[in-house]
Length: 217
Picture (spheres, rainbow, N blue to C red):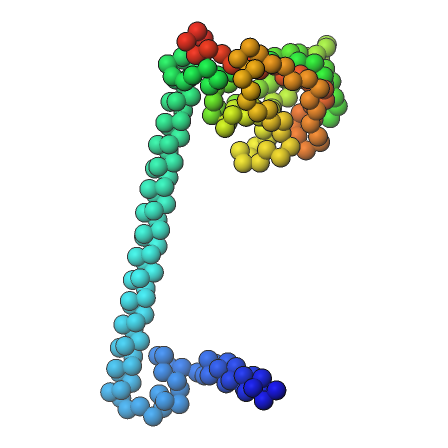
């Protein structure tokens, strides 16, 4: 108990010592005992320390700004290389079988203006690493009603209804690459929840890996 009380006393003394008024970094009671020359030296030392700290903070801000600038340049170059790589796959100048997919979506229903409706089947190509928006059109007399859904092919996954955040695929339909894609494979009765754009119900997605040497964009 005595040890505990002693520790509490030390903490109180430490707190109050930190609250002692200071003049140019010197405790007020000590300042009052200093002569003019000592005060002038204290002032000059205080100003010098302040100048050094200001220069250090400025240098750190400049270094952080430069690092951010270089990071933006690297990200821009990397994005440009990625665009060129994807374009080369579409053009048949690069890649291997499995880097370009032919995807067809049909059947089931998709939400248009708050209700689930049948839609016109659609088909598209997507290269590895690419992300694109596809537009579904409502089947029927009011076929001008449309909805746009994000799709992505990344890290061996075809992602349907990928949302707006590239890192968040919690509610999307993710289909992992299979060798059967070389012949074409259909995934039926796929449904998504209310947290998705399409809220798709019982749709079918057919995926076929295109031979790079034979396709054209």
